[in-house]
Length: 375
Image 1 (spheres, rainbow, N blue to C red):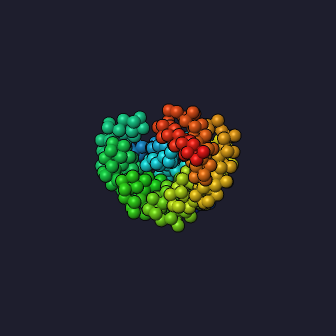
Image 2: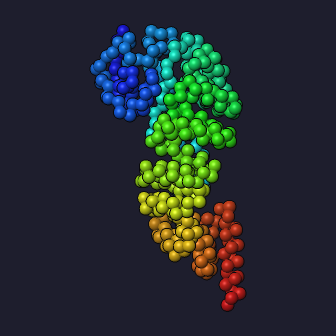
C-alpha cells in the first residue's frame, strides 16, 4: 500500500514526515526546528518506511494516522486572549486548556491501539468537542483503560474530568500524559496551568520550567511562567521573563499591557511604565494603559509628566471617563484641588451609572468644600 506524502519537514532523527507547522516529530519527539523540507504532495512512501508512525497503518484495527492526527487537534481547544485595551480590570487568567499560539500540538509516540479503545475514544472525542462532558467522560475513561499507554487518551480523559470539575482526578491523567510523552510542551504547559489553578505552585513551576526547556521561544508558555514567578514573589526572574516576552512582540499592544500589569505586581514601576508607553504609542486610544502609565509616573515622582499623558489622552480618545477619573486623582495628589474637582465632575457626568460614581461625586464635593473654606 502506498501513502501519499504531505508538504512539511522530515525528521532528522528518524526520517518521519511531519506537517510544516509541527515543531516536534510525531514519532520520536525530535525537534524539527532545523529539519529539511519533506517531499510535496506528489511524493509517496511505503508504509514500511518512516512516513507513518508505527501502529497507525490504514489497515490496523486501531485506525488510520489521518484519524489519529485529527484527534490530536483536541489539544488545541482555545487560544489565550489578551486583556482588553479599553476597559479596566486585571488581565484574565489563562485557560488551562489553551495551546500556546506559537506552538503546535506534539503527537505522543504512537503505541498500537485496541479497536475497542479507539472506538470509545472517537465517540468520546466528538462528544467532548460538542460540549457533552457528562456523556464523553465514561467513553474517554474506557479508552484510557483499554489503552493506558496512549498519552493522547489519558490527556483527553483528563480534560473531560477537569471540565466535569473532578480536578484532582484530572490532574492524575494530565500528569500521566506527560509521563507517557515527556517531549510535548503542550502537555507540560496544560499540566502546569492545572497545577497552578489548584494552588500547587511549586509543582506548576517545575512543569512550566520543563515546558520552557522544550519550547523556549513560546510567548504563551513564557507569559504564564513569568506570571507564576511574579505570584511567587520571585521578582528578579519574573522581571527577566516578562520583559523578554514583551520584547519578543513589541508591537502587540495587548501583550505589552498584560506584561505591564504583571511587572507592576513585581514592583518594577519603571519597567511597567516602559511597556504602558509602548501601548499608548501603538494605540493612542487606550485609556487603561494611559491611566496606568500616569499612575506609574506619579509613583516615580513625575507628576507633570503624568498630567501631560492624561491630557494628551483626552484629546485622542472618545472614551474619556476613565481618563477624567485618573486625571482627578493625579491632580488631587499634586495639590490642584479645583482642577481635580472639575475632572471628577466630568467623570460623574460621563459615567453616572458606574459603581464608583457616587463615591467620586462625594470626593468632588469634599474638594469644593475645602476650597470654599480657604476663601
